[in-house]
Image 1 (tube, one colour):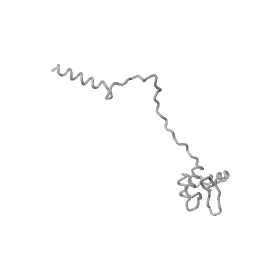
Image 2: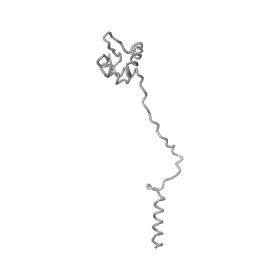
Image 3: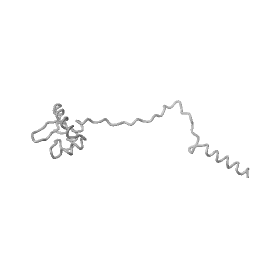
Image 4: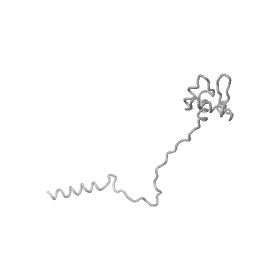
Length: 111
């Protein structure tokens, strides 16, 4: 009985000592550069002004009382932020306002 169990025990112990893929070299190759985890690249964040201009461009280049909620949702800004953005964009010559409560974007896409 011991003659039968000894080879079986040897096979079991040997099978547990070797990883499933075979032998693994515990030391890294000094000629290869070290492997590092890649850092995720995040896209640059757009400013509220850039998001607003892009949203107006995507909605016909004019913000009117009829599409204001759609544009604000797309630009992810609120009414208060809009009140501060429009004068700054006017000073930059990017938008113009009219008496009918509309705001027109003056960009290369909206001429």
